[in-house]
Image (cartoon, rainbow, N blue to C red):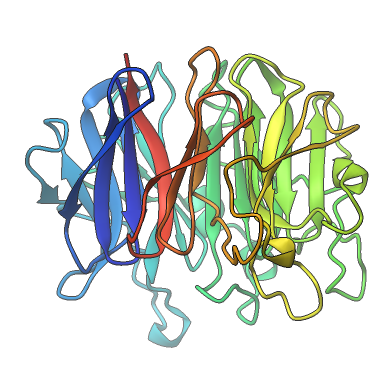
Length: 372
């Protein structure tokens, strides 16, 4: 059985298949009316699930379940910046945007990214959270997170990636400074943005200042990083330090602007993107109203359009950062949640798509919770 966890602008849902990824059943809502930015299950312990939520009466918080979603409680100490000596210089968490289970060797550890950009860690399955001084108090923080920068939802620390081979090796992505790397479990950080364009700045290739929409490691080759940036699609093969803009191989009429990128679980050369219209006014819809995913099978040298099942016209939707994911089945399954409240699924690696749920609120995140 495949189980999908769905976070939306107005609550959370769970969608389960029939064991063959054929028929799907939608269950919910959970926490109706609350903004759920991210809804994630722990791959180390199937019973543990966390939600990054913003509620009317609680404000930004973390909701926790230790029994597979049967019961829920609020974190006793959700992510919060330390109090500043000068209140005028203080920071407060607007919302938690990203939740990341810790390394397999570190049970009960979770990481969280917030708006304004902040990094937090929990060592008790999300019950309490501590500010990570290595990033949040870094001397370069004011330059990495300039107060005037941000997205329509505020400036973000929108990705946390832990190297599966080494819990001390981490990457983060931000909407204000780009990508940063740590090799000492978040105690220190360095920018990792060479070759990535920031065409909205006077210097289009700065050391930092890029808007990294999404980063992901190739599961079968963790030295390969994929990035969907505000200014294109990139790939980096470590130990190299310079990103390559592989999005230039996308069709010119489509471009290489989008919010997310999904690597294949077993094939390090394969990944998928969901392009959006990145023309002058940035309407954030599918180019031409014709939604499609694009797949590369050769590490970005070429891209193939996969649109069978999607609307052939008048499909003005897009997919947010956390709302496109894959399972590890063979053939691999792909799942995406759209801004129009539709959930789409492919059981054949993107060759065809079906709408398996509709009329949900605007979908913010889709993650795979379990598969058997």
